[in-house]
Image 1 (cartoon, one colour):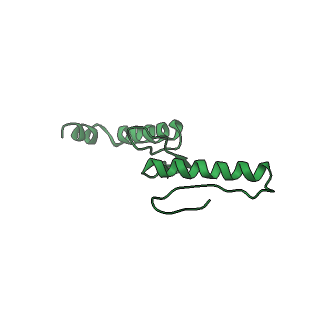
Image 2 (image 1 turned 45 degrees about the vertical axis):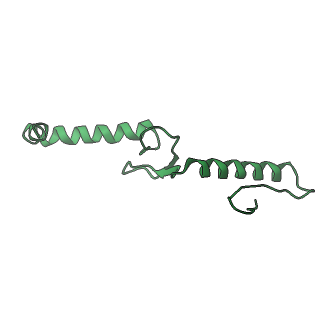
Image 3 (image 1 turned 180 degrees about the horizontal axis):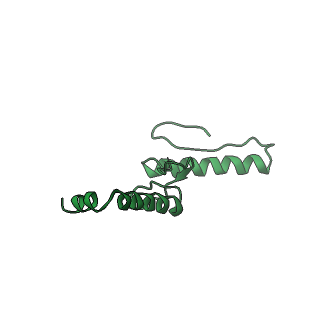
Length: 98
């Protein structure tokens, strides 16, 4: 890839003797670079679940993605619900009346 003049532009240039693998890798890198530059925001993140260490690519929904999968999101939501119920009715009713 090379960058020429301003404004910035991404290009790929393979040597004449480059094989199919080289061409495929350079094309994939160019496509990824273009996709990331067009988004204008961070397109990836780390899962917010405490016991998950995976990363994800945010696919551009209206709200920013926080979890790598719906399974992680559900697990965190269920744990919060169980913790609230275990705290007892005194604390949960006080939070609801605010």
